[in-house]
Image (cartoon, rainbow, N blue to C red):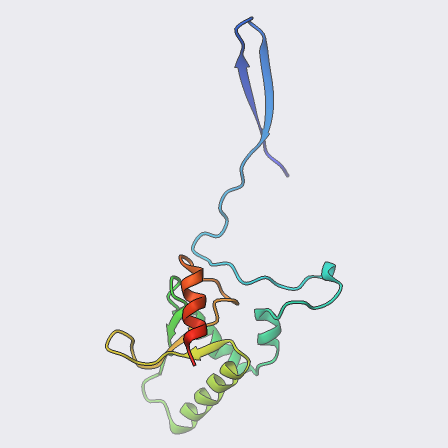
Length: 147
């Protein structure tokens, strides 16, 4: 449903002009960032490799790990810290590392080198899949520079 606002204007010769203007849409992004361009039925073929295509290729554990990383991510840099539960067994650690390798292999995440300002277990989510809130160009540049 379109909302139309009416503008009344009284002209110098006492005529009244009524004009209709469509109401400007609100910014619907809010705190959620946009995802990258996706495929749709009107393209006729798959042209883009989007986040849904990528996540379709991973197992349930890798998908769950991605979801945790996404929830912990900094919306301005697309960086995230992998949550490591206390009391994690060797088997759980092996599984988590296998899932991370799976996400790296298909280009969803990359490891960020640790430094005094970057905590251990830091990762970056591909900013082409989930866009940075502030400076998309900077996030894309950092993504390309990561090994």
